[in-house]
Structures are given as structure tokens and as C-alpha cells.
Length: 448
Image (tube, rainbow, N blue to C red; front, side, top):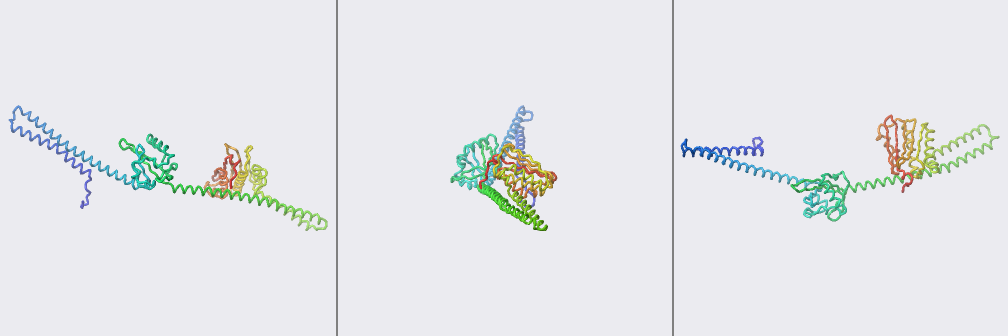
């Protein structure tokens, strides 16, 4: 080990030094052979002997043979050294690759062109519940449910020809695997191929997603249950509103009407004998009763308009628009083209409440002077669009988009299989578009 602090020459530099010194040896051997042979020949002959040239030629031939022989030995040694180095490097690379495969957290399976397993790493043993000794040499179909085997074989064959696969980890549908005990489980897979000489090998990386699929299913089930709960609460709320509106209209309204009639009778009985102050007080009571009756009717209509149940959705929307204009002084342009469509009670209530919530938001936040309301039948859908010329909002993800009113609009539309779109910008108004399938709006009744 060097102690002077200098870095020792690398392995390749040492090989170059040895090869350069070896390259000088054949030339030295050739020169030495030529000189020695010529000296021997000249010592045995005179300088002007006719055979002089033959001696020189023999010496040259011998020198060339020595040069070729020495060079051949050097090249043979260099080739053997390179082969040995390449073999060692290949062994190191193979060992490194196998170490990566063994330590991988993904199940890795390599198969040949006959789809027989040649590599089965420890994670694959854990996932499939099968040892590598049992798996290697077995067909890959052993770990695929029978109903998917032909499809998988076609996929591998196509991948071998085109080199293109739609199976990439995290970007495809969940597949099914088969454990050694016969249990099926969900997995994700990606496939690649390499050539080893004339043989083609396919490597599949697998991931057991059982826990993730369970979590997704539980989340989906929870979401569906929440939607069912929301739909049921909406129905209960509408039923309660209908009951209260009916009691206000029938019970309290009748009592106020009876009280008004009694006051009229008192006025007639005291018309002659009662003084002016008494008659003015009775008239004031009459006016108060009239105002109270009007308030009761308005509250009952806000809770549940009678015409929604008696006349249907379109007249109820017309009444709502007129009432909105009379209350807030904001004009409402209406364009309703639904043909002879018959809306179910559930869809009529949902659309009426959506319109009511949209108009309420306009009155509270928009600072608008005009509202355009349209309800059309388009491409097997009913499209409800409410746009105002108010101040709008900065962005859809702002407070208006997160308000409980708009959340209720989305939930009502979702219960009918519809979608809600909101387009708004500061100073450009607010546009609410609700698209509901026609078959759902005309026939669907919520099961609660």
C-alpha cells in the first residue's frame, strides 16, 4: 500500500507499460538473430565469396522468423489477458445485477421465449408464496389465473414482435395474479425484454397492490354511503319543508283568515256606537292581519311552492323568477325550451332548488342588474344555465366555489347523474351550467 501519498498507476496504465516493453522484444530478437547469423556466415566465408548473398538472405529470413514468432507470443499473451479481464468484468457485472434483483422491493420474474421462469427473486417468493427452486423452470402461467392466460400469452408475443407494451407500473388497470395456494390477488406489472445471444428474455416487475385496492374500495364505499346519506337527508329536508309549508298555509293561514273575519264582524257591530279611535284601531288590526297572511304565504312558498307540486317545474320557475324580480329589482330573462318533457318529482325539486340557490347567490354577492336563465333539451340532456352581469369572482376555487350553497348545487346535480360547471372572472359575471341526463330527469326516483 502506498504511503507517500501518490496515487498508484491504474490497472490499464500498467498494462500499456507492459505491452510497450513487450513490443520492443520482437524487434530486438530479430536484430540479434540477423547480426549473429551474418557474423557466423562471414567468419566461415570470405567477403567476396559467391555465396555471400545467400548467407545474407538466410540471415534475413531467420531474423524475420524470429520477429514473427516473438510478436505472435506477445499478441497471444495480450489476447489471453484481455479475455481474462473481460471475463472477470462480466462476472462482476452479473454478480452486481443479481444482487440488485435479490434486494429489489418489487417482485422480479424473468422468462425465456417459451415463457418458462429463469429468474425468481426473493420478493417474488414472498408475493406468490412459492420458493425459487419450485418456480424456476415452471411455466409463468402457473402464477396467472386460468381465464387470463391466453390474453397474457398474446400480450407477451405481441411485445416480443413490436417491443411496445401498454403495461407500465402505475399507468394501467390492475391485473390479477395467482398465489401458490390458489388465492387470486391484484397486482401491477411492467415488462421489458433483452437479448442474450440468440435467446430473448422477458423480465416482468410485479407489485402486490392488495392493500391499496382494499383502501380504494373502502374509500369508494364510504363515498357512496355519504352520497346516499346526503340524498336521504335532502329528501327528509324536502319532506319537512313540505309539511311545514302545508301547516303554515292550511293551519295558520286559516286561523288568520278567521281572525280577519271576526274583526270585520266587530267593525260592523260597532259601526254606529264606536268612536273614531276604536274604528281606526280595528282597521289597523285588519291591515296587520293582511300583512301577516302575506308573510305566511311567502314563507310557505319559500319552503315549498304549492305550484311545484300542483303545476310542475316550469310554472314554478316562472313564479320564482317573477318573485325574484319583484323582491330585488333584478330583471330575469327566461328561455325555456323543454318540449313535452315530464320531470319526475325528484328532478323537479332538484332543478327548482338549483335555480333558487343560484338566484339567491346573485342577490347576495353579484351586484348584478340582469340575469339570463335558460333551460333547454340538448343531445339527450337537459342543460340549465344561469348567468348574471355582476362583478364575478377572481377564480372558481375562491370562497364562492366553496360555499355551502354551491356544494348543495353540485350534490343535487350529482344525485341525478349530472355535472356542474362554473365560469367566472372578476368583472365578467358568474355563469352556472348544470347538465343532467334526460332519462334521469324524467324517470329517475332516488332510492332512499
